[in-house]
Length: 540
Ligand SMILES: Nc1ncnc2c1ncn2[C@@H]1O[C@H](COP(=O)(O)OP(=O)(O)OP(=O)(O)O)[C@@H](O)[C@H]1O
Image (cartoon, rainbow, N blue to C red; front, side, top):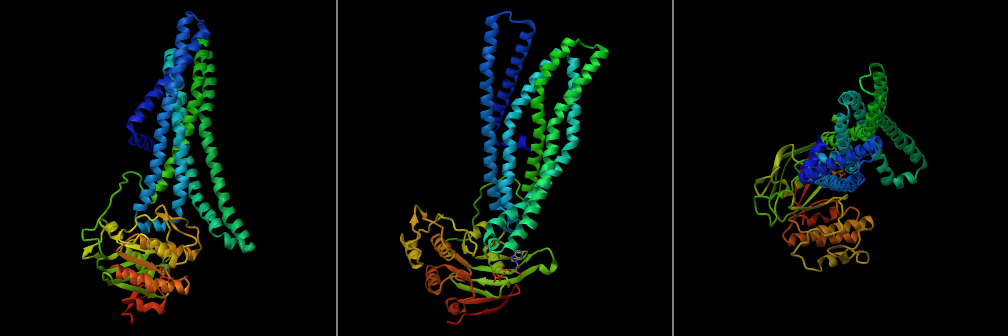
């Protein structure tokens, strides 16, 4: 049903044209079969009429078949395209903390589930054409013998009931195999991401391969085999039931003489043409179950596919210069598996004034990054709230609030294009920064982006900073930006970049352990076990 809904929603016009041309294709093939069948029985009475009729049918059949396939292919490929774009939009619009929690499930979903849906939808045009042929043949079969057709329908009805009874089993295996795939995917990712560690230690490598990857992959394989067996049982059920029906029919007619044997022969010949499309359609039910599992998986993550809208939120207050951030009694808890494992940040009460440079310090695990994500609006306070220039941040303006920031974490993604270049910076500003950070022999500005992003970790991090500065923002947040940089680059960061941002009217928030440079801040705030413990003014 969902598939039909997507087909109609995507393009009613294409769907109607495709369906009509499928019906005409089915009619043409039925007429062809009927004509051949009649000619075999009665010979050719009028050669010109016969040639004309067969000629037209032979042209119309492929023409309408191609038209139907073309329209359905356009439709199905549009659905697949929409699915990809809608899903990505949904992920980007979804609640950040929810997406962060399910991060490892996102990639398998974007690849595996979309590919499952694509494979299934790609079979759809063939199924539609096949089924319309069957409808045409059914009409012809009713005309040949209503009694025999009634019997055929009973046989198909029985097949349908048996198939329906088997569908839950298929869905169970499809679902279990899909869930197992998530686990296999995590291990496959570990092969790529952990290649250094695994290559350096043979014991670890073979333990990982045997206990982790092979074990999970075996389980997934077994579930996939079960799924395939049930699936092929479904497909073969139609053939088996039809053959079974033929035996019963021959036996029944032999004993009752309800219709002539000659008519039975004709009828069976025609009904044989329905076996292949019906068996494909039954097999397609398996694909529909796979689509259902894939869509449920997507929706389970809170990413329902309908109603994706691009909507730009704005703050009600003036947003062309930094505003006052006020955190009022905000808390955030990570609800991990065990209670001991939970971490509570806050309640935090904090003011960050416009154009101020604030350093956040504290020990490892004290909650600095969590507080940053709260300040950025990525995490929503579970208690309390944040105000920006007195305007409370809610779901209706949160994206507008987030637009005020540019943030760099150690795992920030570096886009190779400067997406929104600031207009108030001189043309050669980026080049100057590239030179100052000594990556000018590697990178240059090209076509509004960087010529390359294939750099060392330290170089990449410096390029992230350049990119953030070039893309204008009111507030900059740096999470331990200077942690792994050479002293000379630390010096540039603290003594040149931060003062320059301040001079340009920006607000700067930096998480840091570099006590040597605390004098660069207007104030330093300290976190311990998720609470602000010190509100010290930095010494100048
Ligand atoms: N995504 C998460 N899910 C669950 N718990 C988390 C998550 N991120 C952080 N934590 C936990 O929250 C606590 C605070 O982490 P946070 O990263 O905010 O600390 P931090 O002060 O930035 O630490 P560091 O200096 O080591 O970067 C830690 O105990 C950490 O284990």
